[in-house]
Image 1 (tube, rainbow, N blue to C red):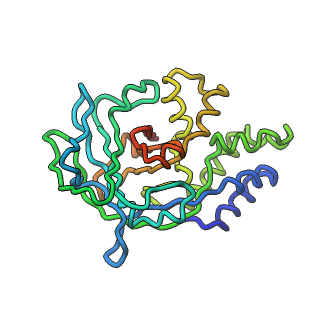
Image 2 (cartoon, one colour):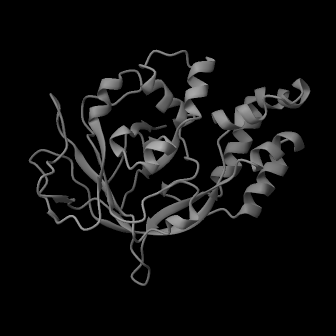
Image 3 (cartoon, rainbow, N blue to C red):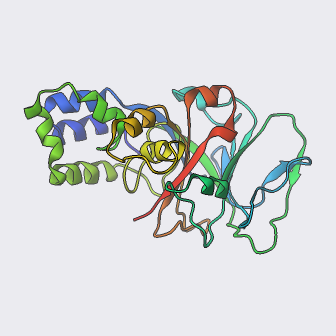
Length: 282
């Protein structure tokens, strides 16, 4: 995964100096969750069976069916002190998603019922819960965490806001799609795959996921290019993303990625029911 020097070098090589300065100023720490080898500490897992409290039912999308269990993160084992978000220092986060005929989409906020993040506080008794019949299940893969540095994508609302006061001739570079592609490819070359992660900037497949989050909370019909959606997008941060992963037998659409986002204040208050979900694929 990239170090600060790698990201800075890419920015200096592909962006005009004033633009590169603003992009570098937005670098954020994150955690890459990758498959653990036997000698490494385990901080979570993909697939398998979730461990739920007795009084917590298996998540269900009314009218569509049960959700599939995607991943668990042991917050107490995660090196969350390296993050710049108020990630829990203990407890467990469980991620669920229904990969079915009905699509969870930004245009229909009611479909958010097709994904869930559940927080189980430390000390609460739990037990493995069997997967309901007919629900997608995934092979268990142990995960370890590696601290990384992440940068925003080309269309990230914070990046666009950061360069808004530059002179028009400096910002003109941003309107060339060829420049964007070269920059995106250079960044992609630094990223480990599959890219499961916590905190930092998301690794989007088709544009900033923060804008997806804004579209959801604005009712699914907001102008994608309007100021309202981009202002709202800057209120959201990545909680976790789960990539397609052959080892876990996970493939989201056309080799896509699942994303859960949350407002920092809701994260500090442990109000995970206020997180939103989106997914993207190629």
